Image 1: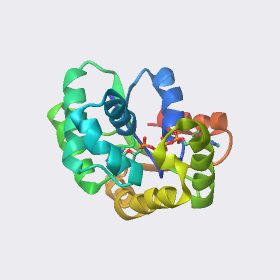
Image 2: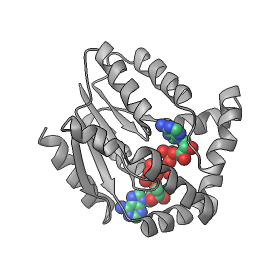
Image 3: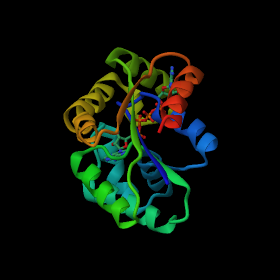
Length: 190
Ligand code: B4P
């Protein structure tokens, strides 16, 4: 199985690049952000709880996202592999993911980390906010909070995957196609 953690701060291009990679490598896309927004759109109990947390730009509790991922993995045991987009976001999530994959006799193949500076992230998300209707894209202080959550809780995962010798950093500024080419090159070298 080819299992990729596509990593980076909010707005780094994880969702954008995942859409290209799932077709190129026939992988299943697992975006916790998309799944949570789907729950909100359907008005489920989970969605109702998640909405206010996401609108503030805070992270959803670990146990909620871990159980979401577990149930999807268990239903897709025949997949060729997975792109984890926006998951894991904390050390607890990363440890759980390793355990879940271990139970399925597989593991993370690589972590591809998109590097983009804070000003560019803020610019992209404010631009997306003009049409996305997402409360967390709508104002700069919420975007700054998301970046701070990333720096405090998520960025330490680079060290987690470095210790497993799996981190590959990719420059995330440039054209979408040029960044895609760099990601493909990193995957093809595995
Ligand atoms: P996500 O849905 O993961 O949102 P994101 O970080 O904004 O996504 P992404 O980085 O994929 O954005 P993209 O590049 O596609 O999370 C949202 C919220 O959900 C979190 O704040 C949290 O509350 C919750 N959540 C999700 N997962 C969680 C977890 N595991 N644990 C706890 N909470 C969780 O797009 C950004 C913009 O940039 C787009 O408009 C795109 O067109 C543009 N863009 C992309 N590439 C570009 C390029 N090369 N040049 C210029 N623009 C580009």
